[in-house]
Amino acid sequence: MTNQYILDIIYLIASVTFVLGLKMLSNPQTARKGNLYAAFGMTLAILGTIFIYENPNGETFRTSVNLGLIFGGLAIGTTIGWMTAKKVKMTAMPELVSLFNGMGGACAALISLLEFHHNVGHTDRISIIMAGLIIGSVSFSGSMIAFMKLNGTLSKSIRLPNYNIINLILMIVTVGVAVFVVASGTDSSMWLYGTFALALMYGIFFVVPIGGADMPVVISLLNSFTGLAAAFGGFLYNNQVMLTGGILVGSAGTILTLAMCKAMNRPLFNVIFGAFGETAAAGAGASTKGSIKDITISDAAVLLNYSKKVIIVPGYGLAVAQAQHIIHELELILEERGVQVKYAIHPVAGRMPGHMNVLLAESNVDYGKLSEMEEINPEFASTDVVLVVGANDVVNPAAKNDPSSPIYGMPILDVEAAQHIIINKRSMNAGYAGIENQLFYDPKTSMLFGDAKDALTKLVNEIKTL
Amino acid sequence: MSNFISFLGEHIDKVYVLILSIFVGVEVIGKVPSVLHTPLMSGANAIHGVVIVGSIIVMLNTEPDNILLLSLGFVAVILGTLNVVGGFVVTDRMLEMFKKKDKK
Figure (cartoon, rainbow over the protein chains, first blue to last red):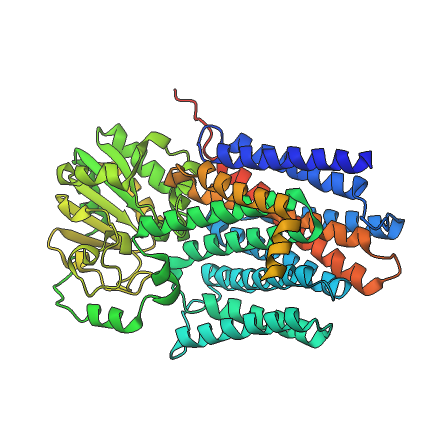
């Protein structure tokens, strides 16, 4: 009995580290320590469960087979998880988060599958199990699709006609079948695996039509789903740490999702049901075009070199081209020549909020040089040159002045207020949202075509010769 | 309906924990700067890896001769560990970038 109390205390400590960890993660000074606290609490909870947990019926199997498999699983998971996380490139971070999130969802779904047959006849437990199964499976398959979308395996948003209605029907059927399983008290594996398959399908159908630009929001949402699934596990096992950990992530994840939606000015409802419409994009693209103006490397170098103030707007193109180091070099050499350089970070620059900051921090860019949208926007008017590197939608004026545009209403960086705008892009292709950008045709705009890393390297070399 | 009420009644302590945790979750990250959104999401992602505790419980409740359940549970342990370890390590790598630089 005292053992049970010790385990309860361990779970209490772990829960407190989770709360503290999350709290500290929301401040740059304490974030890293917070993460370590939470990891420490997690280790305690895992070890405590392995060595102290007692089944309420007194049937705990701590044989060499059971323990061997547990430690084997831990060892394999740790090795793979550690190596993947250590080796991954900073640019691939978002999809990795999605992948790990999917693993958690799959784990929750598996637990539900395993517990089902033990609990047939207990309506309350079966309903918890079915809820955990559905949410875990949706989170798993959805995260896998998000992962494939972010790493480019699945580049197109596939949209069936009336996909919203199909998804709604699929969701109702999935929940309906689960309710039937609970209500009928059946112990049939067919129904169990049927629900599992339907939930997996729903996860796929749920994420597939959503555009890549909205992926961060989707991952954050699925993240809170997995939290919920873990919390259902807490209910099932009367396990406090699963309950608190799961719910914490569930609610924190939801708030984070809403914060991201707010940054993009896209209500969550639109993200899920009104994926960027192809028709609207086509309509906006047909509007008046002007002519675009090229700029050579040497002209761009001169322009930058003799400016007083330059603002760099980094976007996903910079991340893809791995140009975060060379942009820092450009910044340093311009500063040396007496140019004031700042970075303007749109809240959703890159693939995830904060993604750009992480990348630039990696290449030692001073934290104080990164300005958020609200503080930098009034400064564009007094800026000589804005250098846009691989960003598109976040500087698209259509968001301000074209009500028919799918991104209308999204807050953007007011780069068109600056004296000159140099846009580095690989091609004239539309941005992630698939919308034409009127800024490219602005008379103040010059285009510097080419891969970001390549073009910036040449630019730096050119400036050095001046 | 009476089922639902008796369910709530029997688990009222859990329901308290649930409701209060929701508020804690909301409060704790209420004012996070957008710079930290990605690491925070990643950290939260690692924390819901606590679901691994459930998979360990499954393993401890399974007879050593039930090969099917044990192997599925084994897979669940691996998946959960991936979530926990991968999640914390990735978060740490992201946050490593934010450490104060010594300015000359």
